[in-house]
Image (cartoon, rainbow, N blue to C red):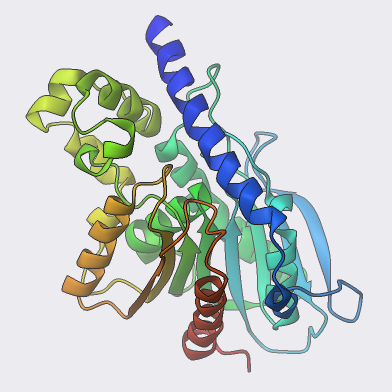
Length: 316
């Protein structure tokens, strides 16, 4: 119990930093944001909320369905919420999900069990929940009259990390082809040499606590020192699963991020390039985790998301 409490304090620091970034981002509303928001009416679409994919109260999802239900098939876009793996809710991304539905996609926000000091939730269990949820989302859309034949998965921060794990590791088991992933500031690597912003590259005890919390497995400082912990974090490090067959990716990271280390983002970029993946990697040169100081880069990111959606999952 003593070790778990120490880990919990570490994760509390982690989530406070995440929330600071999210808050700073949410305060700013540049004029171009209106191009990626919509007034939600019956003429745009409808929402079906709190559908279950498991027995836990947290295992719920919302569907955002375009008003035009006459098409034979639809593309599905999943958007997973931020919150440092310990907070957040599918409702937080309502604006993004409404916009996606207005473009003609079936959109879905999915909740997952958040880590607390009282449960065993981890990135590993959350990733498994997302994997388990996808068939339920597709079946629910079908029951509402929307047959899904392709999908993209995306998210912000923690949600982006989970989206990448699904896209790079689990997509081969998806009920329909996964054709694109996009998102911002999600950690793709939990290798401790990337996590110098927390001192985890040199403080082996701190590194062991962080990896234990994220992986849900007991990791010792000796395992950090001899590198054997990597067999555990490979499972939750999306970058480990990138291959020549990896789907197209559009990502954005803040160069001065103090929550998710930019060095880990550079590892992702290097791997995507080496494997020949069709990708776009954007750096917000003046921003941290909230991406709050680079309006032009944020706008370019969303333009590229639109471009890649139109290319790989066009609305017909």
